[in-house]
Length: 426
Ligand code: ZN
Image (cartoon, rainbow, N blue to C red; front, side):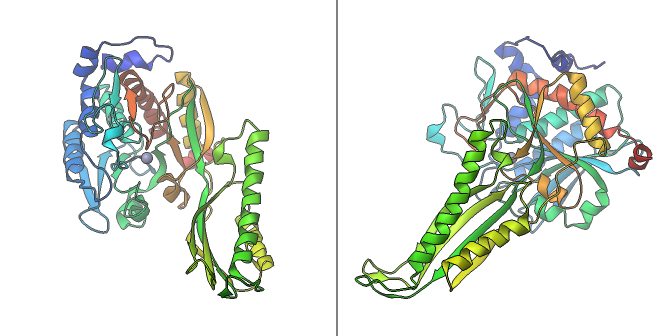
């Protein structure tokens, strides 16, 4: 079916073949992946120029047109490669990835974090080898193989390479507000997932809602030798205790239901505290900061009401300041009402892959699309691999990498070929 033998070998779900180091080194797809890994697009103050140049070369090698759109400044480019569909009037498919990677502590790495070192076992070391430069070049490899087969998708496919996902601003969050994005007429998006340590592949259809809030407790100030009424410390204690009790209820939920994972519950963490002037002075104010990731099953209004009730019970003079307060993003439908999902699932089933459908524990760019009502799935074709995103010695096996290209080849072709939405619904 494919003209690229090095990829087709890995499309068999039960493959056992292992290549030698020399074969991995000489494999064109592995070479491209390692080249991308060697670009140190690392926070803070990322210089994206080498990424843009690399991706332009990739587009040229595929004979596909490429655009560069700038967000807040020239320092934050988005690269968009277009693969025209046979019916470009249909909503398009986005294959999204972020170009940036999180900081490294080089002395903790056994191989340089930007060396793309390939060891004898086929492990390719590098920051971004899991999160998520692998996915970016796997998309490209899949398209290269599909084009070699003479395949053209029904829908137009856009590869979007965005900056600053790891910084949380000046990236996809801004791109979706641009007219340029509206013109892409996006119907569905692929984005990153997380590696899985067993044979299953994790598939993410939703994310929790992120709130970060600060309680500012005002109270009677005075001498540390007194027992003054209405102090900031008492209010602080009351509210923190309530928040921690709620936290404990979520820990218990996880303990009692082994089928749940962290994305299924609400996490509450006290992340900073502040206030006070000196040891013998009762302060006029104290502060407590919480990072909260709210489960998709939780009613946001009821949850906020509960927090405000605890605050009111603690006394007067408490301000609640939301430093981040996301709206609920509707999870992507994973049933027959979503034709993109059905096509994705069909591809997964035909490959014989075992999947686990989950809620993403952190945040990804998918949420900005879901906020617009665009279905998005988070998926990285990495199984039987330690979860090393943001960790030291992040690596990906070359065989796993190459099989991921074959997996994407199937999934992209399947989803990009979905019939018109209206046709399926009628
Ligand atoms: Zn990522």
